[in-house]
Amino acid sequence: MNEDVEHLRLLSIFHYVVAGIGALFACFPCIHLAIGLMLAVAPGAIEHGTRGNPEIPQFIGAIMAGIAGVMILAGWTLALCVFLSARFLAVQSHVLMRPSVKSLFNRQSERPIVDH
Image 1 (cartoon, rainbow, N blue to C red):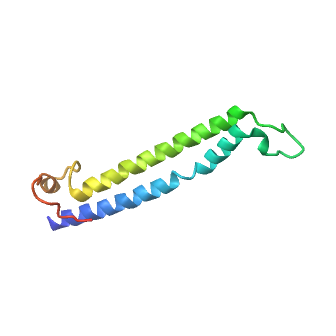
Image 2: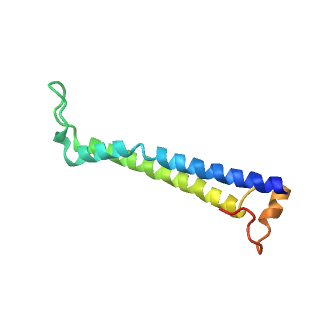
Image 3: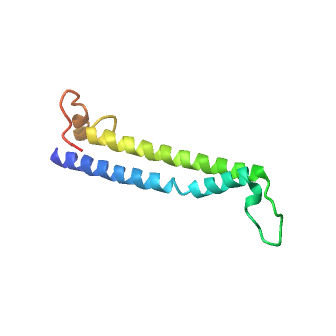
């Protein structure tokens, strides 16, 4: 049984780490969000040099900002789900299938063995 508790503790820690890394990587589209918002608000602010169209249409910036916003929101939502999974593992509720581990999760009246 102690081996199961240790496995749950490690699994919980690794889930916390993955949630943090996921939240960090979900911030990468913030650059695209900022550029898209700048293009949507002030499309003439970026110069293209002597060639090409001097102005980018505003809807291009709005589309860029919208896609980046959706990607950020999806990444943070996934990170939140992994974080909640880590929390449920830590307090031994809502997860896992092994009978010896299920017995840990079925103890509703006792305090969890794994403390964080």
